Image (tube, rainbow, N blue to C red):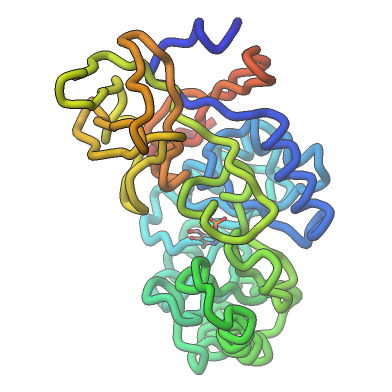
Length: 340
Ligand SMILES: Cc1ncc(COP(=O)(O)O)c(C=O)c1O
């Protein structure tokens, strides 16, 4: 199959760029020094490529992702790097993933109780390191570790995600160091072997964690591409020009808000200015007096944010040039956890 045979809108992955991104990260953080986050791409077939590159420990954001990874034999060491209070879902996750090693992030007595009553055996204490999201205060980490051990959980260490620093350009290394100083202080109180954190934006500045939780580096997006990093955008949305207004100078493709996420800004189109996205359309104009496309032309849009864009699609089509060489199901979507 060739790219022009694909129905639009659909996501396409440039195979060589993806492979180069994976190789660059694996050289920098080989094996267990990287715990790739599957929430960025939600496809076990892509995770399998990372396994082949030497990584057998993964982060997940939902019990459904954990179960999906375990079901395809990628369960050597899965971290549910998120607080989950739904005991029924956690229990189904544990029962469906026998033979897999599952660790769950906890940041309160409630999340500890949920993990414990669901039959989870291992946890990490999630510590707030500056991002106003999940994680306990640094000073509470030791107490929570004691609470977890008291109910029979094994505490493997700590995690702390410095998401507020991913796009930082001013004195990034010092800010990451300061954020991680809190995580290391928590680790001293908690114990265990694991200090987990970091992401694509701090891939080289976070030298403090034992394992980096990056995932977006595999496919990248228009937002992350603004950073000075060796990772190149590998993901595009293929669309068809369905209407051209030559009198007024704009064109419209068959892909809009239901095909890509705009929370990190609108998509970009090479040689054009994107005006706006609506439900099923994106309107754009050629930059600097360039040519308008013709109705029926295929063009690519680069999504602003990879994770929520991929979660809107069923498949990722892998390209080598114009050839579609593989199709990866986005099989880790949704929240339902089915017993397998
Ligand atoms: C807990 C956690 N760890 C790591 C990451 C890093 O992912 P990325 O590769 O997108 O920077 C994220 C992203 O949101 C996250 O939520």
